[in-house]
Amino acid sequence: MAPGLTEKHDRLIQRARIIQTIRAFFIESAFLEVETPQRIPLNAPEANIAPILSGNWQLQTSPELAMKRLLAAGHANIFQISHCWRDEERGRNHLPEFTMLEWYRSHCDYSQLMTDCENLFRYLVPQAQIDYQGHRIVLDQPFERLSVTEAFARYTDSNPQQALAEDRFDELIAFTIEPRLGLDRPTILYDYPAELASLARRKTGLPELAERFELYIAGLELANAFSELTDPEEQRQRFCKEMASSSASENGQPLLPEPFLSDLLKMPPAAGIALGVDRLVMLLTDSRSIDQVVAFTPEDL
Amino acid sequence: MYSCSDLKKGLKILIDNEPHVIVGFDFTKPGKGQSLYKCKLRNMVTGSLFDRTYRSGENFVPASLVESDMQFLYQDYSGYVFMEQKKSEQTVLTEDVLGDDKYFLVDNMEVKVLMFDERGIGLTLPIFVNLRVTVSDPWVKGDTAAGNNKPATVETGYNLMVPSFVDEGTLIQIDTRTGEYVTRVKE
Image 1 (cartoon, rainbow over the protein chains, first blue to last red):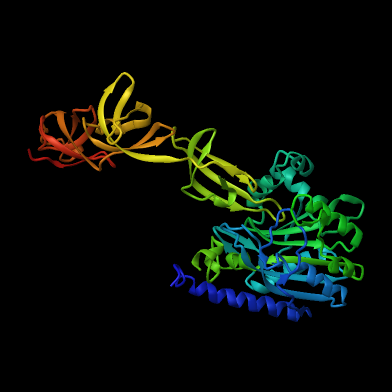
Image 2 (cartoon, each protein chain N blue to C red; image 1 turned 90 degrees about the vertical axis):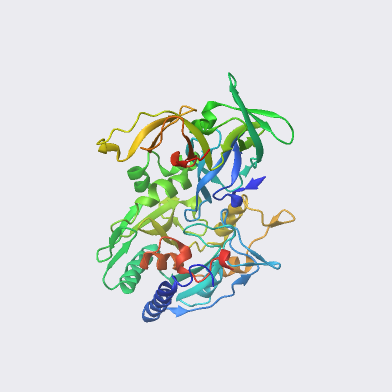
């Protein structure tokens, strides 16, 4: 038997209940559960996400493109729980194959998704309190809303623009800011520099920012959300920018997910969010490592 | 060459031409950001510990270290001189590299020397070494502070606690991992 499988027994039961509860929440909220192919010709180009190849195609890094095409086809509120794959991501909070919950709402922006997060967590945790690795997090008051700019001012000696220019943004977020977020109540970190959100809509009046937020609880990054970009031309340009630092091109012509770009014309204003289910289970079972909440890690196989 | 995905605990890499071993490792990746590989590193020559964060795309040169069977010959002004048994080549280890291990070396002792770039940077001693007690005052009955033990010095200058019945001139066995007395050696 794989090492530790016996000790995982209770957590795997809790994991199943958590996933069933997520499903119940969205069904009660009148969302349609959808399934989209996990093996696809092309993922959205993202500079820092490496897809795993499957024949000439790729395993999905996220079901985002297919789900937005369903929005364009008129399905207004949809959710999906599916496996995603990202090459070379392995650590205490990372598995190269993991479970993602994504949900999308038409005719909404990211502020509605912030409320969804509050409601989902209160539904999952009726006692409105999470004890995780020595932190007690309460859920019965509004989640903290903290802008990226405020977070840099509060916790670092820099600001987002300067940190980007000095190529220190990711390190400051990962090692200085994240560990301090969501320690007594969940934190919503919002409004990222636009260059860090290639699928997100720019903020009206502040085009250097994008309407993107991340949800943190006990220093753990749980979810990433956008007000979706619906302009195909701007989307095409921003994909090309992302690809400047990745390698997917053919005869010098950038290879783009064309069916998605053409459906984008018909997509209503919408907002979407991706939440890591394994990390959610870690949080709700007080597990220090993602290895504890999956039946098998790649190393066990 | 190693890439970031090879980084893990125990891997030995070169940094500024010095061998380092990874003693702590964590992978992290802030949402949509770059992969960050946070390493706690120990310089295998100086022993100093420090943190360093690497990002995907960086490459590392493996530190090739070999352990050679050697015999301790003598100490002189240059340091502690060892000879590789197969090749008859001599290697000198400095007092800094040896640390407290210097107290457990006796002539002709067979040891393993960790070699990097033709330099000796570490030593593995036999687990037990026999050394003669050179100074140890008789035990004073009633000195209960030290229990039934008393201080002693052995031929190499190393100080330790020994049982009250060990006299000057006695050959004793010492555990080189802990530096503690094990038993008297019958002669």
